[in-house]
Image (cartoon, rainbow, N blue to C red; front, side, top):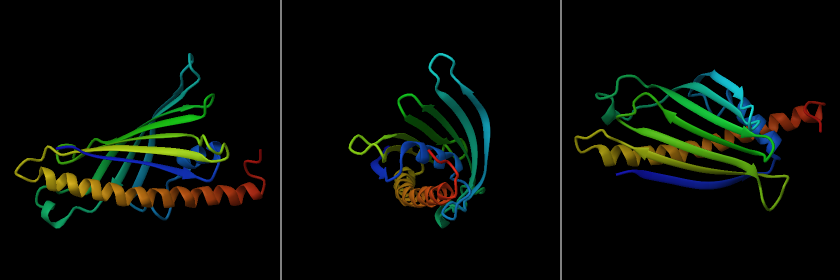
Length: 179
């Protein structure tokens, strides 16, 4: 059975700052599990002006005791694809793991846009799907663990983004990114 997650969150920063923070979010004190981030491909679509980027993210996680005999390596490779449309001020990201996908596949979509109620804020809609094909009667247990970890990590991710946004705000006060 598939588990789903959906949440909408508002950053009290404008879209330009939030999308910049997205690219600068690693390293931060709330993401010590992220080992590296590498750009695989990046180009501007000549027809639409949309910036398309594919990145490879290496993360190290903690495997629960009951899963350590089944999964030996705690490193996970994640593919992140993004589309930034500066004209309509939207950024859409798709992130999914490419290692350990049989045990648990996590697909996350995020849409960043100007908040419709306050143009100085940014709304982020997060949707995720967690699927396990593990078998052996562990599928539901793995998916429940996945949805719990995803929910917990979403909170950490927001704290990390807020940390980076605050750093941008401080630098802006010193002449960085002035409008």
